[in-house]
Length: 138
Length: 138
Image (tube, rainbow over the protein chains, first blue to last red):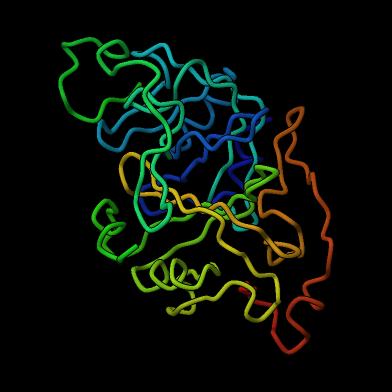
C-alpha cells in the first residue's frame, strides 16, 4: 500500500503523531501503547517489523532493536476517527520495559491496585547494565 | 478503592485527561479508545458503568446514555507509565458510533485499506434522526 492511502484517513496530533495499540494477534492480549509518525508507519508497513516514534528520544524506535523483543506486524487497523491505530502483532518475548509481557500489569481488584503479572526477564537482561535506569525502549 | 490510590500512579496530560482502551473482556476485541478525567474515572469505579470525558462536548460522557450501548466495567488496568488505562468491559451492542461493534473496522490488507466489519445497527437507530450528523457519542 502506498503511504497516502493510509495517511489519507489518519489524523495525527499537532506533533504529527498517532497513538498505536499493540495487541498480540492470537491471544488478544493488549501489550502496550506507543506512537508513530509518518516515517515510522511507512517503515512498519514496508518492513513488517513494528517501528514506533520515541517521544523521549525524538526519533524512530525500532521495537526490539536493543532488547531483541521485536514485534512482527500481522495486521494494521485504524479507528473510525482515524486518530488511533491498532497493530496486531506477534510479540517476541516481552513488550514492557519492566520485563513483563504486557505494560498493563496493574489492575484495580477489590478496591486495591495490584500487580497481576510478574517480570519474565529482568530489565538488566533486556538492556544490559550500561543502559542506565531511565525508561528504556526495548 | 479510594480515588487517590489509582490517581497516584496515573499521569494525565495537560488537560487532565488519560486515554482509555476499551476491550471486550471475554473475546479480547479492542472496541474503542476514549478519554477519562478524574471525575469520569471516579464515577466509572463507583458505578461499574464506564463513563468517559468527551473532549468535543467538554463534559462527562456516560457511554450508552443516549444509544443504550453501555459498557459494564469488568476490570480496570493501568500501564507501566501510568499514562494509559485499559478497561475490560462487557459491551452491550456496539461500541462505535457508526453502528459497528468496534471502532477499528478498517485494516490494511494486501496493500489496500479495507472495511472488515459492517454496521450491526444504523446510526439512526442508535441516536435517532434528531441527533444530527456530527460524531455522536453513544
